Image (cartoon, rainbow, N blue to C red; front, side, top):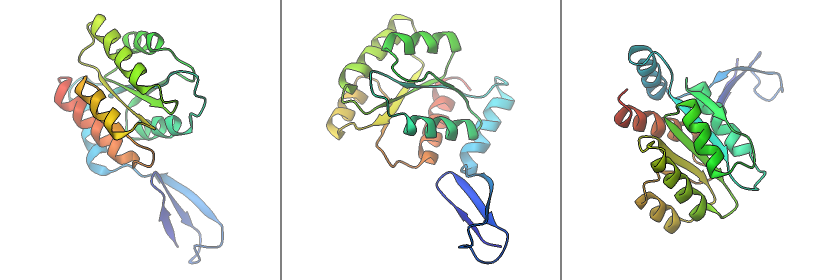
Length: 180
């Protein structure tokens, strides 16, 4: 039997030849420490999983990355609310308030990150939701990412970041900042 794993799933073949094309999906790959921490936090403290809102803001219609992240977070034991395409910052913050989320993840490829993230941060402050993590990813130059982090935005992840790193970051941030 041959086994191989991608960055988020494991497969097994029925025989010894991994190239026979007869692979069966055997599970999603989630780093054990993050999964154990999510499980421990959700079972022992609030009796609920970490809640993350994943949003695509603006007119950008490329949501494959956001969907992969949403699936990875869900597979790590988090509750994920995916807002879909073409959201405004106001829609994102209102959904975050209604869903009582611990974190907001914004996927942005349009180049509007220097407008979108500050607007979300300001709206969160207005609604007294300063304790919600705002993170995200996409095409964001390093200099812009640094400026956004100075304004209170969390870590920003470029394309190709392993999903395990994002799961660990959100899990650890929530554990440290949201009284889990």
